[in-house]
Length: 122
Image 1 (cartoon, one colour):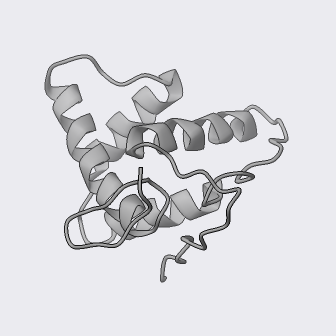
Image 2 (image 1 turned 135 degrees about the vertical axis):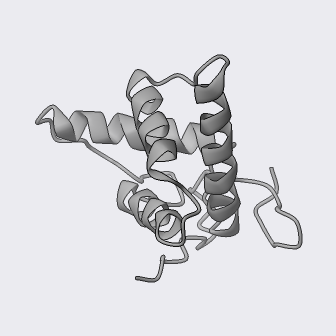
């Protein structure tokens, strides 16, 4: 399933600073939904929707870019809305964030420029 290019360039869209900020935004939405709430305004003022983030995750899992263990760590600490401080879980977190950031930056969801890719200036 192709991941939609969400880099539309609207003036009111504010890209995330990094993958971690985007991940915590996505997890906040997910926690509201899991608790039976109805989130509002998801995606407003951002260059994506929570479903775009989910599509990016699926794209990374399919070729093995993110392992099951990466997803477990991202989800566990995403629910806490904090990154692990140190140790093997922190290494998995950083690897997962790096892989996610490359794709989010290429899609215009995260600000800045990746190597050899056009992006949105920070």
